[in-house]
Length: 176
Image 1 (tube, rainbow, N blue to C red):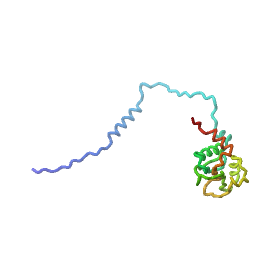
Image 2 (cartoon, one colour; image 1 turned 30 degrees about the horizontal axis):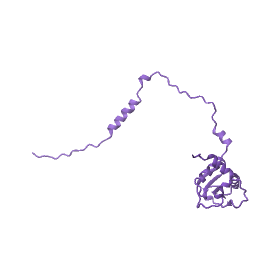
Image 3 (spheres, rainbow, N blue to C red; image 1 turned 90 degrees about the vertical axis):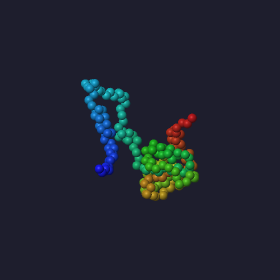
């Protein structure tokens, strides 16, 4: 009598048991609910005393201006660029970049015109009560690659811009 070696095949787990249990769970979950038949479910919404505004009405009251702005902090005051971004956005300017300038030692705030849209520079300068003839604050350095109309670099003189300071103090969280 000769003995032959037989190979014992291991059975690989198929995961079918979990699949079957999952299927049973779905069937059980979506079965008819016999004890709830014939009941009517009603959704009651609260009464609204005010009529909702349409987006068109909101836009007509505060239209977004077609002015693309970059705001850079050039004086080292923490969060100044983000607070100034809020100021410009409250005036409906489109701020697409906010961050730090190449250094933090700008003595004066600069408003740099980057393309041919001079009306953009005028509106930004007006928001700071700066005349276009003010060569200390106004510069024209075209750079279409930046994709902005005006770059604002905030300098150490930012506290002289009353409207900006009023906005920052009115919108800063109160710390105790």
